[in-house]
Image 1 (cartoon, helix red, strand yellow):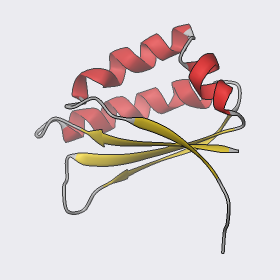
Image 2: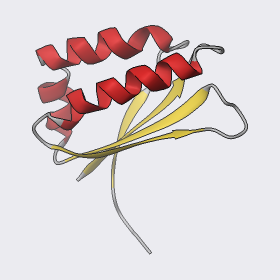
Image 3: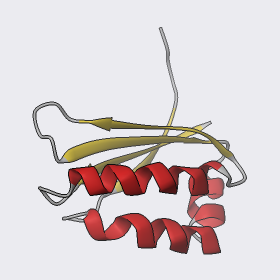
Length: 98
């Protein structure tokens, strides 16, 4: 399992529109091969900052499968205009749990 991590900096004042768009966009990513789950959280101290965590079966399910798909273009059209700056996306492998 691979965990995708992205801090999303939404343009202040557009948080509600972003959340509405995300509620539509999540169905797009959830239908992709290799998708396991996602979690979107909002920062308490900085209300226009969100944490997106997506679990994938393999790294390539995200980097090649999703990002190369026509569905990614739909995701992009729904969400990318809300970000300033554009998020840095990183991928993690789990080592320990408790």
